[in-house]
Image (cartoon, rainbow, N blue to C red):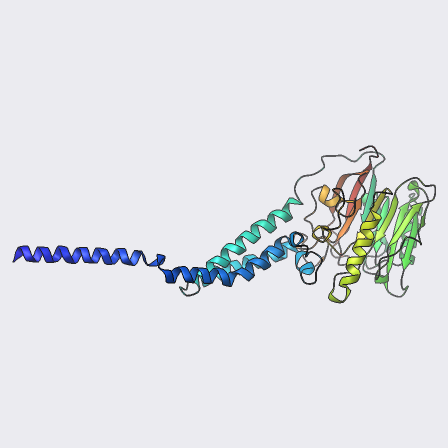
Length: 369
């Protein structure tokens, strides 16, 4: 009897052991494979959307509606992705949606890493150059219809020792008053203004050029941005750069066609025929320019100063958000005969009434490089 009892016990133990091995093998069943494949299929549309959001220019979609608006605030989109990642990670606690949730978590993590790397690579490094005599300082500031006041503008020009000041959404009277004030302070400027309506500041663009750079005349034959004005100023003596203050329209749904044509127009100004310094509110980021660069340039043959100086991550709009979260849509660009010495976004004027931050760039003429 003891022998039979022992044999029975051993048999039961082997049966239990086989049962345990069977339980461990369940994840390899056809049913679980089907569930995993279903999770991947359901997550595929999310993967496509994330890939486009991370690198829309890879699909030629950087200037299409919705995508153009999504790609501008990269850091904001990354923050949303991280919030969703946490939510899907919590959803993975339940068995039914676990495979799908973990697949989406992986995709969101990859998106955050790729998009973050692309963004922060534009804020890495510096030129390593120091300002020298003969360098030209360029400032652009969208004043939202003269909101900061003349005193604030004059203070900015003095603080930065600016030679060129692009002023989108700035009326002619405001620019002229600033030029008079600067003349009284010993540094005279020429004031240029183009407007589509004198009543609305948003439909005016002004440009201040230091008299030290010579006299300039606005080129009225070259063409225009379609909704908001651009100034193209040429040196009267034929020497010196063409200086441009520009303001392409914002990529809102009803203006998408005009926005694309505006960007094509300003890119065409950087065609390499003239030496060009251009500044203003471009209502676009480096991502939107992917199809417009030529011969290594960012916009036509022009190079973005902030990107070249490692300041391409600081947002210039809106001032209601911290600079690390905003979009850099205000730029200073120049043709390759101008070397970028320094560039930065000023964050100490966020309470001055406008929703844009000033951008300051120092350029050096290097015709033989």
